Length: 281
Length: 329
Image (cartoon, rainbow over all chains, first blue to last red):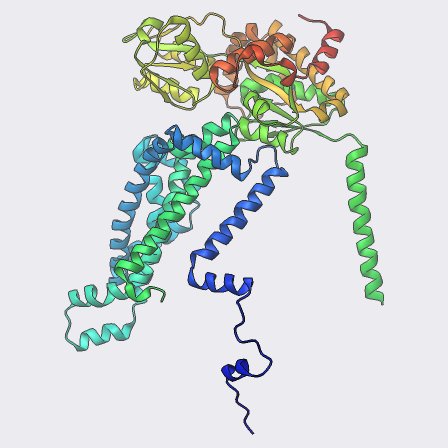
């Protein structure tokens, strides 16, 4: 015999309370379900609290607490040194990332579409991606000196291979039945590329772009720490040399935050403007 | 059963070994771990020779060469090295680590230099661009101090790390006024005699390199530290009396075996030039006071030089003991 009792009936049964007020845990649960940012806030709070604790123990004489770092950050924003540093750091970063994105997606798509381009270029970029770039950055100075060119080149060296290889893989892994469909509808090669291949490859293209920008941040920091200290690299080096560790950590943390926000921003643009179907319901 | 017994035996012996290692670390003399914030060049030959001499007297000196002075200082703060080489005044003031300097090794030896096509003296540099090593460095402090003394101000200061890089930039004409070290000075005098003028400095005296250590280490290993201090002072006095003796020391202790002929050729001129400026009494209180003044100007130290106390930065006991034994010069 099948016993099926609806939950509503059980609740209305004798002895059961009519309206159970939600417990605190349930309230938090429903709040967390409604707002995704809840978990981000919790995770950051945990991170900063453990940072504060580690700074207070202290795990090292040279390790500042979170609050000290925060106030050092405020101080550097107030006296304008942070803005100035970012103006300098962003120049090679933006130029390098733009060049890498344009050239990288172009080359990657070309490699995906043409076997000749693949044979010619793929090995170069596979080697470049595997190479430990931190060891190669100082070599750039031998050819290009210590100016903006050398720093932009360092960004490109890190960002370009990632973007190229991801774009190439993206095009190679386009769904073949979509391409077949295009052909059976008598689509031209140009239509095939722009209406089928690139739209279908775009998720991986964007993933490559995000990885490339992250690599670009690594590149610009390597350049500013290994070539000549400018911008954020100068803030880090200078405050380390005069033992202002809170300021040094603030500069490091700020570049991490800027990098994270940039990537999150790119993802937002991607999901909201370019590919609305990917948006989480 | 057998397996269990074996496991217990293995763990017991592991514990015993760990315990023995830990205890031996406490009981017997540890090696003296020295963190050097630079690669070894001919300019540190006399120090390397002094380490060898301390080793002969039974102090197991182990030198590690690190990338920069900051890292050497961090190694001492974190206890991974016992003695560091450098002048970590900012660290001593801002990080409440129990670190003290216990002897001076060398004084800053830099030469402000200008291209005579453009400038002749300090006054000409008013409103002009100069190049120094890095922000907050000794070279910047010297240039600022001299600007103050001459009543001028620079339009901008660019940072070009490495005296040899600045020397090259001067020769190429990319930089018109900068500050170089003694080997840079020799290169300039060699390659373009008369083209560059070295500007007078007056008496700027500050520590370039000093030895520093944790106070606990200094009190627990007073004897070893004194042997090291004595070895350094006697070597320094020898070299100051006869700069050529460094070559003999290099041969005797087989120091820097990979040195190229050019580097070897540089030994005697370098020491001949630096000998008069070598601190033969390990600096001490007087040097400390000069440093506090200098590094306050440079920005490494905060506050007024008069309010800073020597004992917050220096531990003079080992140096004074050795000096009372071997006398001052």
